[in-house]
Every structure is written in structure tokens, then in C-alpha cells.
Length: 542
Image 1 (cartoon, rainbow, N blue to C red):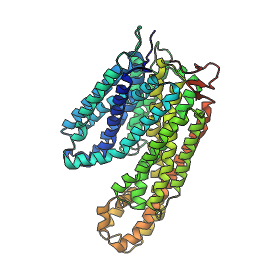
Image 2: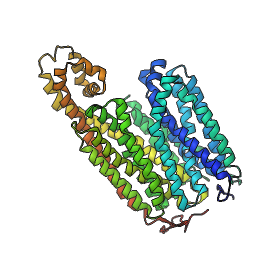
Image 3: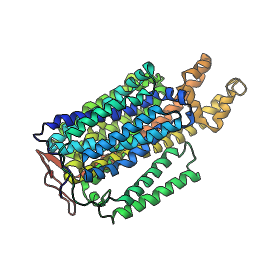
Image 4: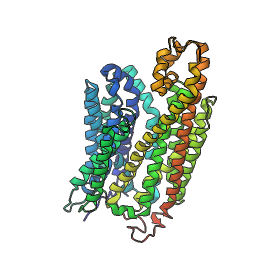
């Protein structure tokens, strides 16, 4: 049986392939940040404000659920055909999104884009694992991480420029020429790739149950507490479907001839430990990405633009540390680097929990940098570790697994941290803020009476004042001096708890990192992985 392997040690196509990978990774990751910048203009043109969040949700759902299936298919049919297929689907989704005449059409197009993105995401990391021995993978995985970080920095700027100087539709159309260029480079760069030519059995039942089960879980987490109450029949039905189909997936995989996800992989302590760490890392990472802008805008009072710019130091720190981490991986154990990164992340979250309404933007940014350093140490290590202890025939599926578990962790983290904030803020506002404000003369019958009546049933709506400069301008300055300080304090108090909970989750990730064992890279060999019953390699099976 031939296995997926890219023989490129002395291959002149290596440079062509690397250029194609970097272009494809950049344009796929850029799309996610550019679209967010363009959304206000899109909503103004297509209307549908009530469903615009589905533009992001549809992409997330489809991209996450397809990742492990794409990794398995790449192990069977080869990297080239799967990568080109992913680029084609992504480009098709982009073209349809640019042509969308309604928000519904745009959402469906973004779902198609997500399928392409979910195929492309693990391919770049997998191919780097195929191209380089363990001693060199770290550097290139770090470069890939840096490209992802770079897209987060320049994406909003590019998106803003496109929206200001052309139609928002070019946010999607720009993917077409870049995608064609990337596809050409990858097509020629991967020519001559070896792949399995024996008869294979495709696990259709496993793929179907995984898609339905994980899709139902992600959908329930996305809709619960926002579109529908947690106890509603809609959310309960989604979670019940998730349990049934995920259980069916596990049952089928244990009996499949060639499963999508072989559960014997979890007998490898590196694979199991790394995916647990990735889950908790994704959980914490979204704690930063989702709630930091809210603190910066609502509590410290910076503009939306400055809030976005304040995230740049975190991404820049993550970029630089990713490259450093790729070099360190050949000098220290996997668990040491993972534990160090998660420890630094926990320190970053603790520092963020100490911020107050009187904190400066510079202070907040310095704490954000600490968080970015920790993330940069962890992200490339997750991929390098699992790739180094499995042979090329399994590299696609194990690489995809790390991305899948991190994505699931991100979604669950976003949901749980949102629930934490909602619970804390509602209690704080009802007990400490609203009773005080109601005693202010004229508030019961004045121009703000309707707003405070609504606050009785939806206290968090009061935070909208802090996030809307237009609303603040309508409030007399004297009244602002009375209302805003306690309101900011209430929001800060809620976010303090969010950051502390995120810190606690990351601390659990530190413990999980210790389960990885003594595995380490020495030269081009992987050592220190001796555990009975585990598919181990004394070095990388190339």
C-alpha cells in the first residue's frame, strides 16, 4: 500500500508549493476578517439585520464539521485533489456571495464557502508535515501561524479600504484571482505526490453522523440563550440530536473498515493530550477575542476602530512567538512548551481581570500582549506534536483532529463565557444599578423612562448606551456623570468574572499538557514516547 507522502527533499517544486500554500492560507484567513469589516455596508444594502449573524455562523458551522472528514479523505485520495477541491468550493462560494441579492442568499453562499475553508484549513499544516522532517517542521508551522496572525491584523484595513473605494461585493470577488493563483501553484507543486492506490472503503455512514451530530451541537450552542431560551424545545431538540448522532458516530467508527476517526488514535497519549489542550486553548482564546473589544469599548471607552487596533499587539505577539515556538520545539519537550504557553495565557487572563474603568488603553494592550505570547507558544506545538508521532498515512486525519477539537472548544467557550457574563451582569444591574437609577428625579417619567422600563425585563440593554456614541450624545452631560460610572462598573464586574473563568479553563489546560508525556524532537527523531498499546514511532515514519 502506498501512503500519502510528498517527496520534496531535493525537489525544485518545493518553493512553488510553499508559495501556493502561503497564498491559499492568507486569502482563506483574510476572508474571515475582511467580511466582518464589510458587514455594516452589507446589512445596509441587503437588509436582514435580524439574521446577519448567520453570515458568520453559517461559515463556522460548515467549516468546523467538514474538517475531520477532509483530513481523512486527504489521507485516502491525496493532498492535491482535496486542496484543489477546497479552493474550488471556496471560490464558488465567494462568487455566489458577491452576487447575493438577499441576506438569505449571502448566508447560503457563506455556508458553501465554509465547506471549502474547512477542507483547506488542515491541508496546509498537513502538507508542511509531509514536506519537512520533524527538525524543520517547527519553523514552517510557525510561519503558517504568523500568516494567520498577519491576516487578522491587515484584514480589517483591507476590508475597510475595499468598502470605502469599491462595492462590498469585491470583498468576495477578490478571492477569485487569488484562489486561481494559489490553485495553480499547488497543482504543480504537488505533482508526483504518492497516495493510496489500493481499494479503499469510504465511511459514508460515519461522515453523515459526524456532520449531523457536530452540526446540531454547534447550532444549539450558537442559538441557545440568544435566538431561543436554553430550555426551549428547539434547543433541547438540537442537543438531543447531537447526543444521538455523535453516539451513533462513535458506534459506527468502532466497526467501520476504514473509519473517519479511528478511536485507536486516542491510545496515543500525545494525540489525546494535545487535543485536550487544544480544546481548552480554543475555549480561552475566544474568551479574549469575543470579550476584549467589549471591555475596551464599553468600559475604557475607546472607539470601535481603536478597539480593533488594540487587538493588533496580541496578534503581532502571537505571530512572533509562533515562529520562536517552531524553533524551540526541537530543544524542549512538547509538554514543557504547551504548559509554558498555557501558563502565560492564564497570567494574561488574570491581568485582564484586574482592569477597571480607570485603566488606560496602554495597560490593556500590554496585558493583551501577554495573552498573545501564550497563544503563540501553544498553537504550532499542537500540530507539530501530533504530526511527529504518526506516519504519513495518518497525518491528514490527526492534523485535522487538532483543528476540529480546537474549533469545538472555541464554540463551547464562546457559549459558556457568554452565559457567565449574562448571569453576572443581570444580577449586578438588577441589584446594584437599577434601584439607584430609579431614585433619580425624572427618570420614571422623563425621556429615558421607556429605556429603563425595558431594562426591567432586559437589563443588559443598558450596556448598549456604552457601545453607542449616538445614544450617549443624546444624554445630557450632567446625567452622564451620574449614569455612566456605575454602568461601566457593572460591565467591568461582569467581564472580570468572564476573564477569571477563562483563566480557570486555561489552568485545566496546563494540567492536560502534562499528560502528553516525555515526547520530544531530537534531530529528525521523536523520542520519549513509550506507552504500552500505543502506536508509537522511534522517530518519524517518513
